[in-house]
Length: 230
Image (cartoon, rainbow, N blue to C red; front, side, top):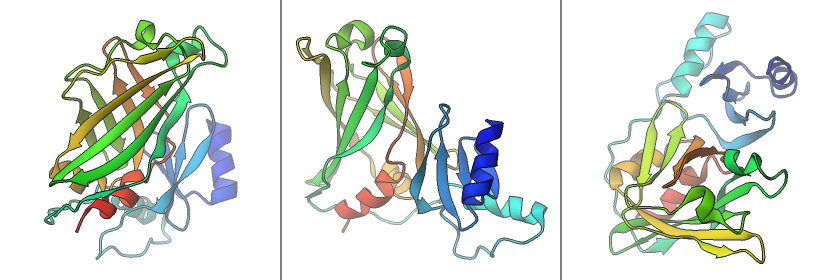
């Protein structure tokens, strides 16, 4: 991790690490997501700043406090009016499963594509999971009513997307993968938080275990939520 810190400083001009060394800010305000395996990705947006926020100070202490302010979750009480629309499917999660990695060196990837849509005043997020194993039930079980996908945002907020129905996997043993196609309804309060939030952690609560996965589209909701709002 020390080498990673040096690397970020040299290449990106990182000013300050936040959130337990899992995110970093570049000198021009862009957010970098750092992963435990040494890889990184841009969040593809700048850290949200308050309208009356002053420019970063040269003094180290003042600069540090300023960066902390920039990464606080924006409080949004504005009204939301939904329109009928659908955002194209996009990969949100893609990375190794801790459980599958114990048994398989290569066939251990979990992927989840998101499709956000709105119809008749309801916001629906379709989560299409693909497990690179033909016997997903043995490792993960079902997605049961009450299971959730928890999204942790930069700034400390966590949004729990709770499934209200049971979804079982479709297993394709011959081809070596399984799929779950499941939906959750997003409340307007969740939309308010997510449309201003950069996601850097995703934790899925399956019926048999809970696992944390790599987020490959941290700014997904910042870009997608406006597409379903009037």
